[in-house]
Image (cartoon, rainbow, N blue to C red; front, side, top):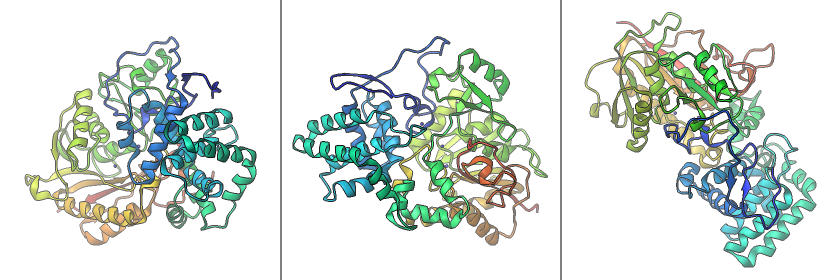
Length: 512
């Protein structure tokens, strides 16, 4: 199947911290099909006022504890009061990117676990107080503001714990350098790595095994803020034309390049309501790596001809519909889009409606072909398979804390079942594009290798297009003059980490 102000104790509202108010447009917590309320103008927008910080801290503390208990942040944000949602999401992202460090600090500063509601506030405050040197990812509020507002928050819930929270946080500020060194200085394979990299230990070990040369870079990249990338609707205009529309609206952007010719990378994330023509389908929000699926499926690729008009195409796991829409922007297709989740499939319909496109939609499990297939073979199949989402953690920082080691084997089994179920539905000479937003080789290279062993009529042609594992690193993780760490990657996304982590394989069926 993807981110500072000082306030006085008496201040009742504040401006959202710079860098935090723009998170909403490129996360799954906000539907990319939401219609804007107005068209952006070139005049400066008024400052956005947020609720008092202590109210946000209570929401974030609840969200963090719920994620630790296994609930999705997207689900939690959907239940958050609308006026608190932007700030809650922004701060939750920050805390989840520093949760390993915050948990290690809590264990030192409060070894006897406090009540869950107090623990959530402590973890939230400690993550916000973690000193990041003033660069990207640094704490968004002044130290005294965080302490003051955290104490105010705990007084709303458990007044008897206010003194305890105040003492813990002030001790951390007094001993910050020593405490940070203590919790992060540890041997490989110990808790110190969890605090240093803010990922579960099993995740760290898996990346060390899969990517021994760049595992630490991948972990650091997961804690970075991703760019907001647009996909220009080729049926409504060129990338250059839309770039001019952005410039006229005062939005700075640049063309990504030939690997994703419809992509524009914004200098700063903006609400979709600021994007010219969004409601009319001129543009969509989609990461550059996700934009590779459409061309690989329908356009000519090194010996594989472009699909003819009216070609029969299956998008097997289509929600939320970004790739489905891209397929229809690139070619006139007879497209069937499936998804096992009827609610998520409705988002596909919303996307298509905004873009003025049509496809047949079915809420079914693609593996159960007897329940939905009409017997007609497909010219091409896009299988954007369910996966760990380990390649899009920078957009969904809760994923690392929600996944369990056993999930990878279970997901790999589902991926194999989907491949085996759909392969007989492909015409001889047709292509199946297998995609996951995963960094783990069990869901990428190893999955495809095993499939090729099972299917004697399956080929994996060598392509000039970007395929194989794509890493969210500059030059796909390669040194300046070296080969990328994944030898199957036939091209490099570029000098900046503008692509999410993905895997692509184009599989063709031998002609009869």
